[in-house]
Length: 205
Ligand code: IMP
Image 1 (cartoon, rainbow, N blue to C red):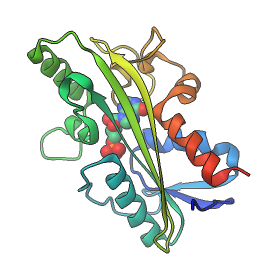
Image 2 (cartoon, rainbow, N blue to C red; image 1 turned 135 degrees about the vertical axis):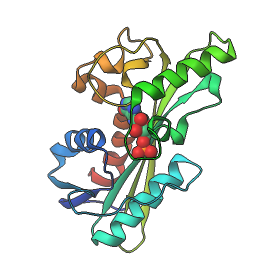
Image 3 (cartoon, rainbow, N blue to C red; image 1 turned 90 degrees about the vertical axis):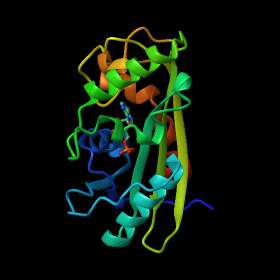
């Protein structure tokens, strides 16, 4: 049984400013007081899972235990069909520069373009996945997964959004997520899909 969340504080178990901003926008209307893991000074656990679900659950559990509050995590990524689903759960890691924490998505997008060119394919299908885990201090966890299908385009276009947005065109659209107004992206994204499920199960009725 999924557990209901009725107001109060919710920790977003993420240090990614882009994600925290999107999650605040999406949960704004539900009267939740959204605080981020970085606001609370919580450490970032290592993402040792082998699926979006495992990583989402381990991040949410760690934050809920530390903060003593319900905690929501998002593990998401871009899966490229012709690259057997890569970068997938390694989407953030493909952008790491050197050995540090610094990320550069221009490098990650270049790498996708290079690896696609090396396969000599014309298949540019890709999808974003968003796994959402809502964990409670007593160990209860609910999980939801959303998806948006689309295609890749090079060179990258647009300065809105974050991460791989400039190379992704959602099905039925002509512009990239990077060129799209945030409200429009929020209505159709993998995160929107996962949040619709979360809201229905945990915040509705
Ligand atoms: P993680 O879930 O923190 O491991 O990182 C997910 C990574 O996937 C992000 O750093 C982005 O690179 C990518 N990603 C996830 N969602 C989106 C999105 O909506 N737009 C662009 N990139 C995304």
